Amino acid sequence: MKLFTLFVISIISIGTTCTLLPAIAFSNITEIDDLKRKITLAEPAKRIISLAPNITELLFHIGAGGNIVGVDEFSNYPDEAKTITRVNNHALVNYELILSLQPDLIFSWSSGNGYEIVQRLDELELPVFVIEVTKLPHIPELLKKLGRLTDKTFESKRAAANFYEKLGHLNKLYGDKKRVKTFYQIWDEPIMTLNGEHLVSDVIKICGGVNIFATSSPLVPRVNIETIMKFDPEVIITSGTHERLESWKKTWSRWKNITAVKGGHLYLLPPDLIQRATYRTLDGATYMCKYLDQYREYGS
Image (cartoon, rainbow, N blue to C red; front, side, top):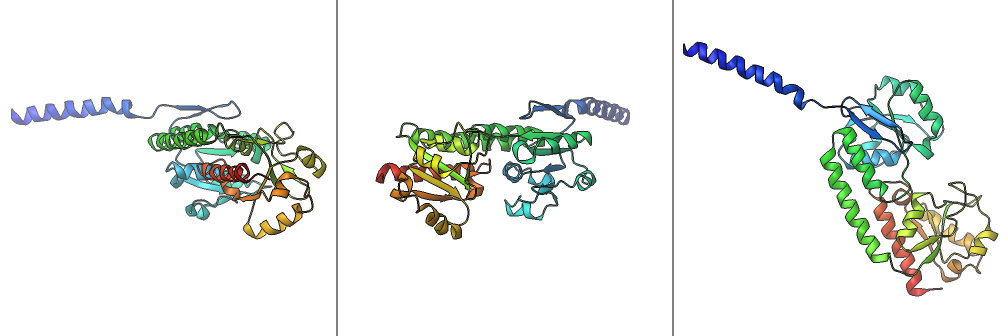
């Protein structure tokens, strides 16, 4: 009798367990990307391809780096990203290699990769989530989306909360400070900058600066020295290596009538901290704010 009772209890337990299994299974995950497209996954992505270094960095930041099976040629942070298979560069995408990696999800950078790449991946019936960050508050929201898509919800929410806290601190420090006319240079010949739709312009704004080419078009406009002199920036900032800094300053020394040149307010920012939309953008913003404060303190 005891054996029969135990047998019945075992059957009931097994049946109960089987009944509960569907309740803990993943339901479909749906997110809207920055092209306003609905992306639906049956379960969190376990085999990921990142076509841009900023996306790679964000995925590692929330603990999803171990799921990345392919990256672009410039994904160099953190160090673990350097060992991942390269699937694209600035000009070409290896679609055959991407197909062979059997990704669950591909992350693409809209303005960097271009729509033609997204279109081709769509034709290959590969799921693509397109990203374009133009404002600092977009970064923590993106972190949370990435977390939901990769089953890193807790980690992404924590990272987003920390980002919001640090961003709020910068807003509090610099929100009421004197506006500083700022020129951000990304290329020398021809002279190129970024307009108000780029994340860098938002960083300038957070620091109490004014991007003198905010209303220009396209996203990366070419500008001439006459126009720069007309706007007369109080601070000029570029990004690149320290080896380039002295020659860059020497080039600008020919235009001593520009307030920034006359006062020596020409500064260098590490490109990975300012031109990539990542958690470390806040570090770039801290540098930017410090440089604008130096103009406020010392003037021209």
